[in-house]
Length: 303
Image (tube, rainbow, N blue to C red; front, side):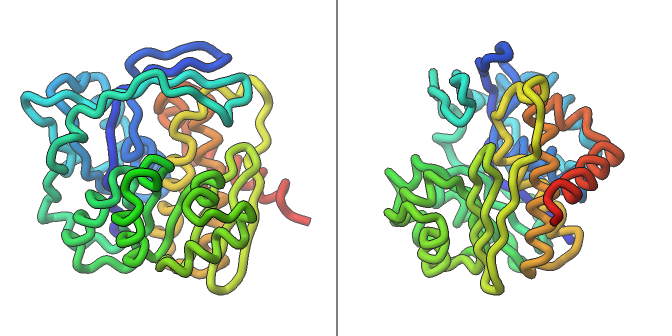
């Protein structure tokens, strides 16, 4: 059930209606690994600069099931940084700054000990970097990736080449429409699967997620939360993917029923993330809180 994730680690500055946080840890690999580790051991492949704060390393070390052997601290380089301000409608945000830093350099090396990884998640980064990472995992059984609007804009050819090699794709509703030119998400999902992936999960923010699978479809809502529990949505999509892939890796299956249940675990995991800035919400998650929310979510969604 070896699960590995590759993606970005960043230093974020975030403003929401609930407050602001400067210099918190972010990045697609970070949130995914922390979320997935609540369910299974996870290996991470990522690179940071020499300016990466030691307290951020301590945060990652607080998740005992994250294997950090694939984390490179690169001398003479600077860590990826991002700043954003969310609107009152947290589905909307403005990017205040982006400093790519080490992401403009070569990707990190993959430890030889990771080569037996069977479940691969390519968290959001340039599709050519994602594709290159696949060569390091000859025993891969299931490969799932995330992407974003930027790569659809500037690296569409590389993204389509990657899609042909994937088993699954995770993206949001706006990106699915942008990629296919189709406003209807069912049709968009079908078109994406025609590009290569067997299944696609389309995230819809506070409106949940939609799954298109060879054996059928599934729709799940988001976890109902009161206003006090909604603090910072940064990383919720990556946390959703981490919880989802954590369950898939734990079961070793990718049938319709398993992925549908995996999406529920992803929803529960993301509900911890949104409650605090950075990784603090995931740090406070426990087996008990995860199971309690999962049971509540299952009750809410049954009929």
